[in-house]
Amino acid sequence: MTRPRPISGFPEWLPPQRMIEQQLVDRLRAAFECHGFAPLETRAVEPLDQLLRKGETSKEVYVLRRLQAESGESGDEALGLHFDLTVPFARFVLENAGRLQFPFRRYQIQKVWRGERPQEGRYREFLQADIDIVDRGTLPAHYEAELPLVVGEALAGLPIPPILIRANNRKLCEGFYRGLGLDDPPAVLRAVDKLDKIGPVRVATQLAATAGASEAQAKACLGLAEISAGDGSFVEAVRALGVEHPLLEEGLGELASVVDTAREHAAGLLVADLRIARGLDYYTGTVYEAQLRGYERFGAVCAGGRYDNLATAGDDRYPGIGLSIGISRILGLLFGAGALSISRQVPTCVLVALPAEDQRPVCLRVASALRRRGIAAEVSPSAAKYGKQIRAAARVGIPFVWFPGQDGAADEVKDIRSGAQDTADLATWSPPVADLRPTVTAVTKEIK
Image 1 (tube, helix red, strand yellow):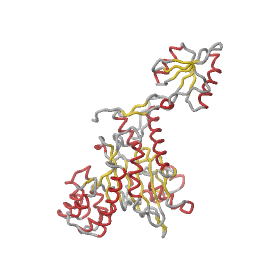
Image 2 (tube, rainbow, N blue to C red):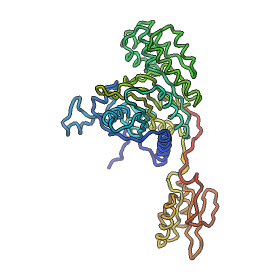
Image 3 (cartoon, rainbow, N blue to C red):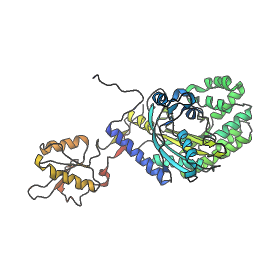
Image 4 (cartoon, rainbow, N blue to C red):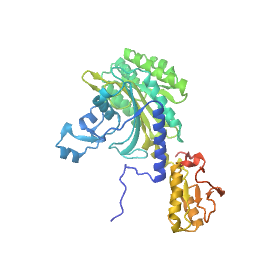
């Protein structure tokens, strides 16, 4: 068999990295549930016409050709892997509305697939964590201020750089563009959304080509995108551009409320940044993008916004708002920078030393007794000399070695980091709480 080669864009973490990922997921899950969000998992496959109906392009969706062939489906009935968790969630709400209590708060931590060019921190298969709130008929605007606070709190408990959430409002943008006389706001938004990637000159060219903008209109759109503030001063900066429209005023008020709430409860977490557009057509209100401080050049690690029409069928309407955290994206960037470490390479807290092979049943009983009290333990694989067993534990970071007593002697446990060794009662001994699980810590390094 030839040596296998990795497939680009499909990360496989080593066990220490996987343990870091699991601890991050556990922290997010606990924080979300603390705020009343219920867990959900949806299927990986959705009808292709549903995946593509709100602004995504077909080249970003993986089509399942075998399923399509077996089921006889084709064209609009074809199936694809979901590229985000919002579209599947909206479909789930419509299918299960009669069994849900509204407003419905859910979190979802699941793999998604997207056919884009792999690069640092950006993959074709990745783990994503979403929180959404949906309601029946109408959704109060105060949720638009709540969600970024939940995400900020969840991520603040992790040994990662702090995030900065940049927020805008689609009503603000659409009202401004219509006030300028531009009748295709989605086309303008899609062009402005590329500002960080292609720069203002090329955006202005696209505005002329796709939205019919004059030079003056393009200049005004770019002027709006330059406005940013951590307080309500952005409102007057927008009004100073001299554009008027009722939808613009509505959006200004909603965004100001989001910024003011964030300043009161989590100063420094969120700023108004009017270049944030979000390319997906289904957003209708506040939109967000978040970056890791110090890693801004790598783009957003968290994004989302309000959607009023995504979960709609006939007269049934379920507006929602959501934020997505790119778990694989965050970890890929931090792993690449060597910015995270973990205290050991295995979950094991105690290695039970093996005096002789015929003593393995005794050692297995010791390990079982420790496990019953929630202490991760394993028995040494062989009855080598104790020094060799201790060194094997040290190589993977196991902090304690347990020595079963011989000929009536008491058991002893050794902290191989400090060298301290004491007698231990199997029924009562416990390690320090910090040693029960591997500990993830941040490594301070210069970002290149």
